[in-house]
Length: 69
Length: 525
Image (cartoon, rainbow over all chains, first blue to last red; front, side):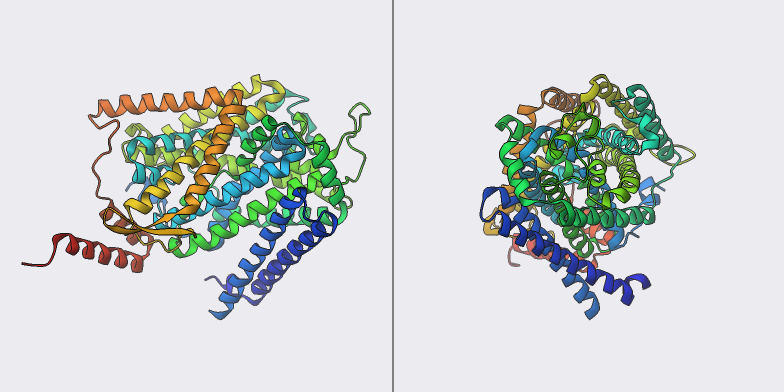
């Protein structure tokens, strides 16, 4: 692994990035649920929110794993 | 020393592998957004959702196959190995069509994005078609020349552009949803702008082009050390990122309240923003148009998004030049194409014949596209969709076939949802996602053939031409046309894993092969 990848700053950036995706995903899901609810028009938005949360969790797991190593 | 031995060093890092894929697939949304809005109107987000879910299945299939068989041939290699030489050729030939379209479409898009800058408006395809044609032609010629003399995009440069683009697209998404997104407007747009079934199918088939370029996962796999460990990690992040941007842009555009009244200078008629995005004159720069209309952020975005988009599209166009020569090289090595495509330039050691041939084809496509006038960009999109749908369809069949025919190859990453069963006396796992993905991509292929007037004729004609070339070549060499050449895939696989540095997996495979050999021979007398 390169020095950059092992650096604390990079780990923090990854963590920030992961949390940003999760917050964005939750925000979009909440916004859709509040304004549209359980209607067909919101499905694509829910999938978008879920994908953002999934990417955030995926990156968070990667960051935690890298810290462990 | 062969070009392969000279050129393919396993030095790509996880980020390098991610950015390689991102530079390829990430650029697609810049091209697809306007085309899909032009076709699917108020259901564009649904079109992206359908194509996106199919793409997730395709991405998972490529991830499993590329990490199990880390060779640069990609879809062509998987299909050849799973389904034989003839279908391997068809898959490779369809990918070649996509790469040549890629060269033209992305060079066109690159100039389109630049034309969004006020100082370069002269390059606009609608305003000055002749100038636009000349500049796109020059861009293709320059890329061909650079590839002939052996100047390759550097992984570091790709990485930098990809990082900037991810930050930029996330910013568009963030500020767009913060300042301009109105969920009620999204519902209104979907209800008032819902298209006919024909338009929706057309939109879905165009939406798949925002997810083309997964061959890059295989290309990266061949140059990545320990690909079985690295590729799944980077691919899954890549798949999710691309899906997010496609869904985010389409939802945002449908529910976006733009900064200014739309459109400026359209004869006083006010349009919905998403309709404006789908106008032919905006299709080749849709992301820049959208970003520049986000309140506050748009002032800054208008300055840099066209430039960043143009750079990303140029990299993607270059990957078409590089990728087509590499696929042709791989196909000729397996005797699917004449050996002329393996020939390298004496001085530069690059596959000059392949580069000139496929760039020449790209120029022919450019001429045909330019003759379509305002519909030129859509013409290229049609063909691009056909090539992608055809090759991805075969890759799913290959995935299923390889699970059944080659259960011993270790798969460090396996697509979830499998049914354990026995096939020809061996324990295998049948991939349910493979069947779902096949159904999805086959439906898209049907949509392409049904809704694209040009793609329906030009796409199958391209395949027919390829099959004729393949038949003539194989007959001239005394090789089977419908059958396959005998190959020792097990020995090849051991070599592939060894070359990839996956020594544990290689040992595992060797052990399994020995066990199977012993079982077949039976107990000693």
